[in-house]
Amino acid sequence: MNAPSYLIGIDGGGTGTRVLLADVHSTILAQANGGPSALGLGVHAAWQEVTALCTAAFNQIGQPLNWTQCALGCGLAGVDNPEWRTQFIAQAPVCQALTVETDGYTTLLGAHSGQPGVIIALGTGSVGVVLNAQGKRKIIGGYGFPSGDEASGAALGLRLAQHAQHALDARTARDAFAAAILSAIGVDDRESMLTWLGNAKQTQYASLAPLVFTHANHSFAQTLLISAGDEIAKMIEALDPTGTLPVALCGGLAAAFAPYVPITHSARLRPAQGNSAQGALRLALCTISTDFHFFK
Image 1 (spheres, rainbow, N blue to C red):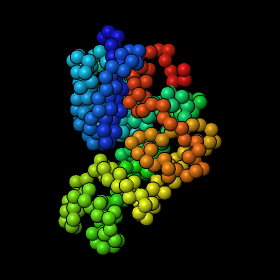
Image 2 (spheres, one colour):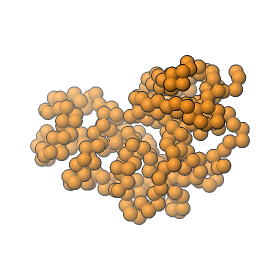
Image 3 (cartoon, rainbow, N blue to C red):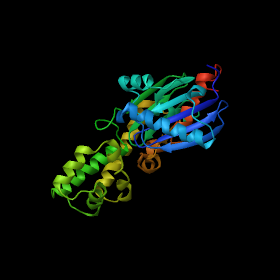
């Protein structure tokens, strides 16, 4: 094949997917946003969403999608699962180059422009990643819903669903907060709750998370938010016990969670310089550039 004409950065999570289309000099030509492409929701479904968004991006520049002209960098939720990663690569179209990493790692590359640092990614799921000055990385958390992903939208949503169950049973007050959860779920009795629970996945649970912030003065919501802040602090400490690296909170819930990070850790927080899709684009560039590395 000839040298690639395009770079594609793909950020695929449990709530949505972002695609950046760029030329080989990393000049962004188009972008497209769509539905989830986390591998836990199905590898075939992930490729369908990615393909649709890449097609949409190429349509914006008046060109048909031709994978053989493209180098792809992917940051995807679920890549830590070896079987899903293998399946994703096996189903890939023929392209110039393909690099597949976790969305946590591409988030770090975007947040610190490839330089050493710590990120805590807070969205549908959660994960912590560090890249140190020696180029070594470490990932913590991100074990997946429902057993892991503390301080995530799905984890909050799970606790809210439990709170709604208690309200239905009169084990807790059916106040405005509980009523808002039940309304968001669309249930009002035990039977419909059981039906919802039987069908709900991490995305549906995560969709409830905003209610915690809109009812932040409620005692139960306060408990959840303080606990989430403590979990974020624990991740920061585990990733950088020396306290020397910059820390960025990233993801759709980063700004909402920031006020609940304990003051002992909040002073270290820095704004993210870029996002996961931009980090994925850096991966794509790395595949075609022999002299490019993350510490320029």
